[in-house]
Image 1 (cartoon, rainbow, N blue to C red):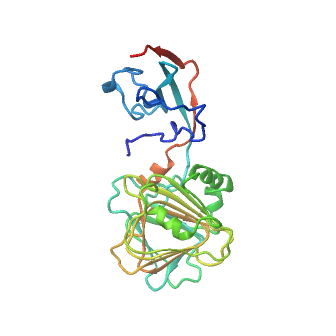
Image 2 (image 1 turned 135 degrees about the horizontal axis):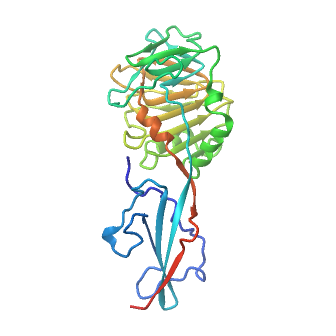
Image 3 (image 1 turned 90 degrees about the horizontal axis):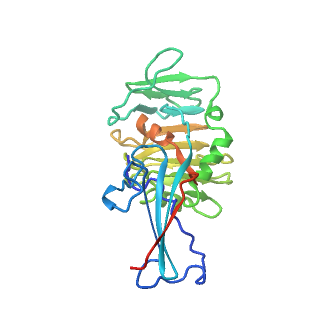
Length: 327
């Protein structure tokens, strides 16, 4: 897991203060200096070696340690903050769809060869295996081809709404903002694909929303989206679209959880390539053309289900202030 700054938005200082509020520092010193470190027994402290820059005890509490120059003295403010978070509670399955299948080769679903964790167990039957839940192959020529560790569960109706109701999609939309939210009226599908392959996307939630009835998100080449260390959650909300929503070809892998309100078209002509690594949840049709593969990885799903930060709050009675004499 990434052990970098765990809450990168905590110390985001607005840039709209004017010069009278945020005057230039004097004596070549910063006006405000702030850091975060864990609430371990050695902290808070002025000893840099004792500071742990991530939530090592996993209790969602960190120290913010800041200094500010006011008049001719420096002031130090210490405060604990508590992360307010929301679990995503995504299902631990390989594929959810209305209908799924493909051309003469069908749609391959297997367990990721790099996955070393345990497989889900059906609580009702005790059967082990990552589930593929769908109503059937519909009008596709061929059905889903399950690999070892994959179990097929056909249902009378798709259970997408029970797994991802509108309120949970709204929550994902809020979590994606500002940088990861794409309104199709203002940001193109090419911008979306470029962002997904950039440095900012891994480990984030990305939400693409469109009101168009004709939408086609195309991606080719071999540049990955997300990484094994930092998978991403991508939501494509195209509930008004009547044509295939996603058309992915090429040899690139997608690492993470792909959620689609609409249809998915996967293309591949290399049987050695895993297109979707993690899981795919769709309320529409998932069609494979050529030899695309969905590879279940439960670690990615559990990573996504970890609590995502909504905001932070000051821990009561932890605010401390000191005046540091001029040096």
